[in-house]
Image 1 (cartoon, rainbow, N blue to C red):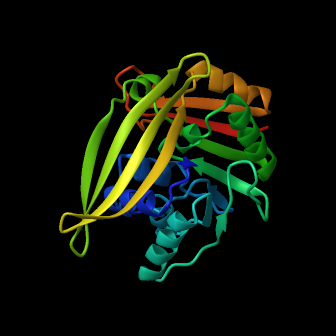
Image 2 (image 1 turned 90 degrees about the horizontal axis):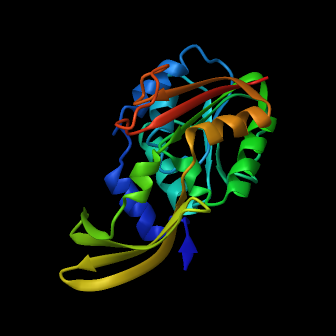
Length: 252
């Protein structure tokens, strides 16, 4: 059983559910915030390239890494379909390699919260800081606490060409309010003509961060000029109704 691994079926579901070109306001936001950035940019947990590819098409020098080879395979395929090329690395948040000092690191869509312990999160932030050049920026999204703790068990389905069906049964296992972690069991099943062909189990964990908790963590690690924004509106004070909270911090 895997934890936050995004194996074969999970990666296919991500590819079907969040294809390249679909934006939740994040693509436009990051295009605006990174406008004029000429140096190298890194996207951790790049997935299938939903964010990376539009930024690459806009002329930004962006590369990425992911812990899932299956995700990287989809990303590489999407790059090839568009005659694009960039460096993709099989790595995690705490063991990736930055081959040159980075101008910016972009962690959209709450991917940072896949690190399900405070220690892992701090280690990743420290590595981000070390990988940025002086004055380089970290841009990072958080899902609000309410969005994480309110998730319920349920089932979703996707059509899987040419004539298959994928089901995802998500079962809530635990909410650990001290560790600030939720855990679910995800059961992916691939069906064809009513026949079950493949099953995959993954434990899925998310850690929620308080807004001021993350601000203090960034300051402790040597970041400054921190701007916290709600709803992909730069500089707007986050509200409970915002679906995303964005941090932008500069390496001092």
